[in-house]
Length: 71
Image 1: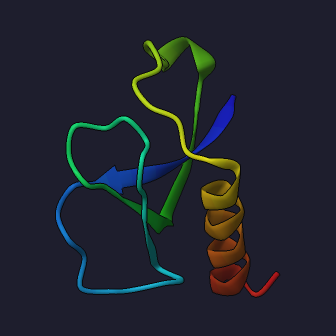
Image 2: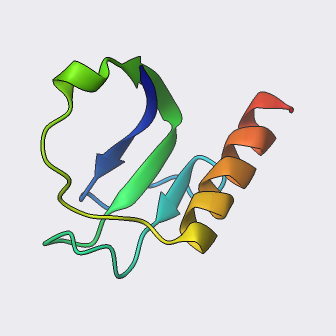
C-alpha cells in the first residue's frame, strides 16, 4: 500500500495548505497537489512513474497535511 494525494492541472481556488503548486516535476502541465484529497492505493495499481517531486516540495505537502489535520 502507498499513500497518495490527488493532482490537478486546473488552477485551484484554494491556496496552501489545501493545495500546493508543483514545479519542475516533469509533468506536461503545471500541476497542483490537492492536499485534502489523500488516499491509499495498492502498489499493484501503480503504473510507470511519470514525474517526481523534489524533497522540498514533498516537505511542503507534508507541512500542509499536518496543518489540515492538526498534527
